[in-house]
Length: 373
Image (tube, rainbow, N blue to C red; front, side, top):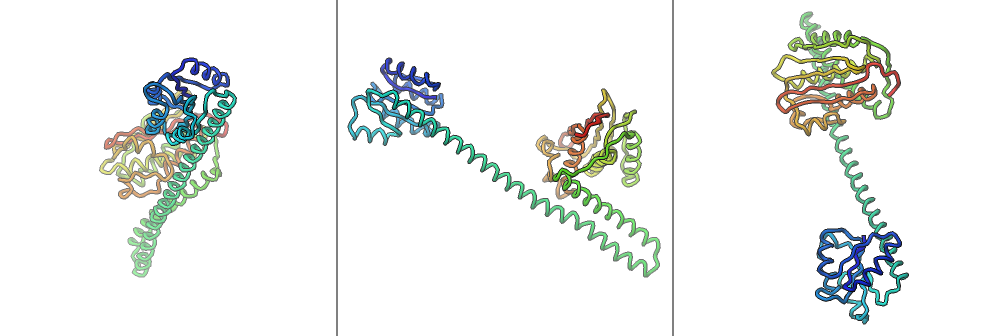
């Protein structure tokens, strides 16, 4: 928008009409004082400022405007009928003006100057936007690099832990074999098997995230019984975590079209997390129902819970809650993978939680979506 400042009404009207004819948005002020008030309230690309005015003259107005942080980038063109000597022109430039035009004004020249200032303004604005975007991208690269380095550090630590344990159990097995201690051998084999399963799970997650990133995560979708799947999952989870009771409420009572193995992966992730982040508790609630051809499944625990900020980020890649990262193992990619699996089934995933009062992870998906998502 352009602000024209002149104490002569005829000048305001004629300039305004010419500029508006060429689709410029124009505002006017009949004194320096009024102009300053408008500059404080509005943003102007250009101010056309008369030098000779009662009260504050144009130079004083320009100097005052240059002190406003909001308007310091605004271009000013001075108009003067009397002060045409070099010293006045020099004063105009030193007061913050970018041009000084003497009256009577050649409207064609003024219009060309206004168009030039607008073109410069647009170029400057675009450059500023490009600079801002570039800086944001640089910060995003830096953050991505930081997350990558952090992930590599976490992954190497998490992978090393079960490997070190397996190595230790193998050494113990060698000693037990030499002694012919069958019971001890079985015990060490069982513990080594647990660590190998952890290692296998970590490697599977790493492979999954690699496939997601490259768009190569494959799905084998077909009809399957969710109720049967849940019975099997609950039985397996109970065998490996006998101290936890999983309370199942509801039934699907219909076949689900999807990748049975991947849906099982999501449910196991929910249950495993519920057990992991619920120290001191021994019950988990699993709710399932189907309504209007939509499956709803939720796993609720009574554990440590999450803050709203944590809930917002929990499905992001590599996200780990700072205060729990030292207490609980993990790569921070399980829920990210789960969210991608549910999205590929045309569904949505979410969490309801209160800090210190537990969490409920859930997903909703169509039961019979036969097209690939």
